[in-house]
Length: 347
Length: 274
Ligand SMILES: Nc1ncnc2c1ncn2[C@@H]1O[C@H](COP(=O)(O)OP(=O)(O)OP(=O)(O)O)[C@@H](O)[C@H]1O
Ligand SMILES: [Mg+2]
Image 1 (cartoon, rainbow over the protein chains, first blue to last red):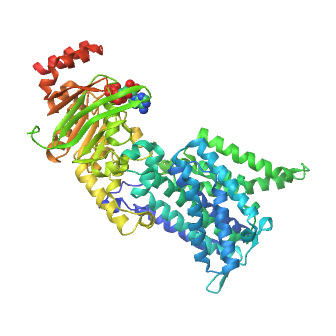
Image 2 (cartoon, rainbow over the protein chains, first blue to last red):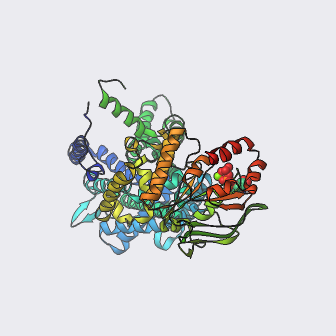
């Protein structure tokens, strides 16, 4: 059981990790992440990189959908914008990797802000449909703006290279992607300790009162969309360096549903939820693949079933969590933690 | 004193309609600086709509609203909030996803400068502003309203009376020059009402904030207000000192007309005589 902590000052109380126990856990987690590549095989490194990319994108989507209450089904298309930005910058201009990633974020943020404009007038289902429409427009651009995107054949990239170090294999990429994911999550956590994060949540809970209390809705809704898209853009840029080929097929609409599912399963309006949701949802297809492996001796077309089954499972998870655990895995995690904090005293 | 001091808020010939429904018709009155001004009137008289016009949430058909001598008719609600027009809502409008502390802090939004980049890094200005705000909210607002014990609770878990108090706290965090309270004691028990009355008087006297309140509790109106405006079917039918207003024939008829005969006898005559 943990003993209640006396707060020394308001500044200490405002800190992100305000108890020594939390700091110890964080340090431990960072250490495990740093040592992981030296113990894991290629497959697990590949999965870790993918999870980290998804963590960035899901955190971004959670900012606009979970925290600001604006449903977006364009996250995959936004990642596409980031991925193409990096692919073009890398192959045409050969600009530095980090600069390319920032450009990917910035350009996607601008696109996201434009896509977010309908949010000033419409909410809920209508906004969802508006973002779906935008994402189909973006796909059209990816497939048809031949001079830039090379149409359906897409763009292949060389491996990322920073100061002569090449990030080709997952082992190396891990050290590029995971620190950026840490930075992304850390920044998002900071955001919700300030007036900007409060404004987002206020807009989600009661937009009209928020406006009367001093929050300009136009500016903050667009800011939320832009920031969320910045995250998607960076995630897409890393995706491009990770898979090294970007085509219009790389970011299908179902990928946007995947991100929305991750937000819902992890926990809307929770940073921890974004991480848990990204990990969980990235692992689901892998578990299904395992299942297919087990089934294939008995079921001749088990492999062909994989894709539809995956879509059904995503949908089922969204519905199941919305009904039974609307606060997602983050809430389940909190309950478990509370149990151990109070243990052996019963709650 | 409140009669001679300059008005902080002036409403001139304000009219508001929804389709064919005239909600406010040529409403004029002034709120003297440093006063407690009450707006009373039967249900549906247009009191809340009046507040919504002042906040900028409803756009009046015609008329002017002057705050500290300048017309604010063209300003958006957030700009009005920044000028010092703070309010609470009749049907409590707290943010369910936030703790009490964050709800209160939100009130300060318009007066803070933290940019998106400051916020993401939580460095420099963001850290300084948030720490200062926390200290001020703790020392000036939470202590004053005696809500220390609930500061970290989610607002959804609070009892009704406490929610109203948190709403007041949030409005105080807005650095109000004029505080608009829409039925601050509706649904409260006697003890809660007395607490609220004490807070309102303290805000007026110690913080120097002008109060404009809508209230049905005539006892409270008689006790607190310097100035009363009576609204009926969207029109001002009387204005003046509390005692003058409650002995006004039109006012009595308005309440009789609305069917609140017993309520009226008890409140107006009983309280005024007492
Ligand atoms: N947004 C709106 N659309 C249409 N009609 C409205 C709207 N807002 C208010 N009204 C109407 O305006 C009239 C005045 O309502 P308002 O809420 O201002 O009354 P009130 O004096 O605050 O009453 P109460 O004492 O019950 O709070 C009512 O007839 C109401 O139905
Ligand atoms: Mg009302």
